[in-house]
Every structure is written in C-alpha cells, then in structure tokens.
Length: 126
Image (cartoon, rainbow, N blue to C red; front, side, top):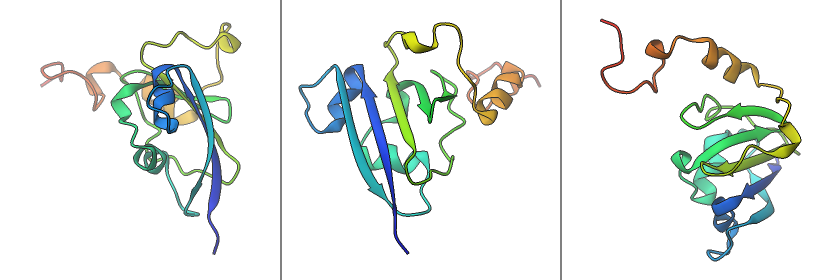
C-alpha cells in the first residue's frame, strides 16, 4: 500500500520550513506521506508550528485563518496542494474578492465565539 505526494507552498517567513533557514519569501516542495495522513502530519513533518501559520488553503479552498484552524485533522489525498501563509502575510491577491471556504471552516465560523474551543480564557458563558 503506497503513500501520497502532497505539494506544500510556503509563503513569507514560513518559507524557511522548506529547508533553507535564510529563505523568507517563498518555497514549494513535494512531500511523501503515508496514505492516511492529515494536515497535522504535514506540519509535524516540516517542523512548522501550527500557531505560526495564518491563512491556509488546500486545493484552493480556505481551510484556516489566524486563530481558527479546524483543518488540523483534515485527511489529505494524493496530489493535494497545501498553501501556508504566515500570520503577518497579506491576504493573497488572487482572493481579493473572497475565497471559497472549506465546509469545516464555514461551520467553525458560524459557531458563536464564546462556544469555540479557541476562545480566550474567561470568554465562555457559564
């Protein structure tokens, strides 16, 4: 049973996780993963802390934003393209008029802030 190949695009300061610690602009690489792999496996393999990523796209769908990362357990498929933007990166110009949202991100955005697991301490209703 073979694995999968995923293309990872790293923008801004995240480019250093592509292998060149001096790179702060852009990196693209293809990585091999076991057939059943999740987005968290990509982050772990690359040594990229989840809290450093801002906007994330998988195959052109917006899957995560700063402080809202419901995509960590998303299963990946062979040929997927994952684009990670740094927290301080500007919104990608290709999406200046909006982006298609991944259903998991849409559901997370529709939950009241006080009910989200990532809400700051003390914001939960009692």
